[in-house]
Length: 172
Image (tube, rainbow, N blue to C red; front, side, top):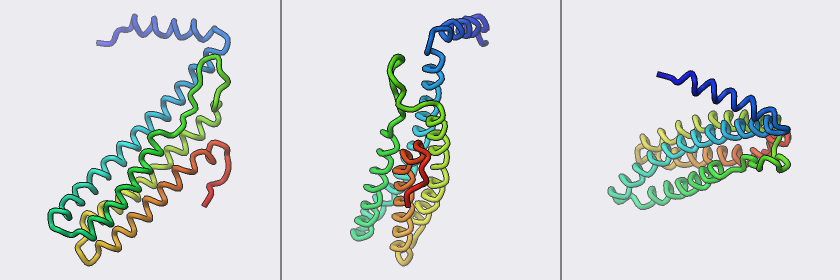
């Protein structure tokens, strides 16, 4: 059962702290940063799931002795890992309470919306991964080329985060 007294006490403490000059804005910025970080962590976990599928396929190809296909898939995996790390370690605008904010609320909202839009690129990536894992020997090369293009597209969108914060059009 929920503890209404504890929740009421938490709300009271929050209201009391919000009376401190500058604290309410700091708390709101931190909540926005946390929401964006949670979203990015979710997106990274989706990428990790796709990487796992590709790694299984790569292992199967390796056991079958298909060295050329393993090499092509390994390059895609390396690029996907690089893009995953860019998203995972992307700037989220943290500052201390009394420091000048790196991002204000409008920029943090734009950043969250932009990160939410990355879901479309991840859906396309997932489709390409499924095509690679299901490809026969004749269609493997084309499936890997399409996967490489999807990874490049995802990378461009990840790189575009800073432009999205600044309100600039995507650079492509």
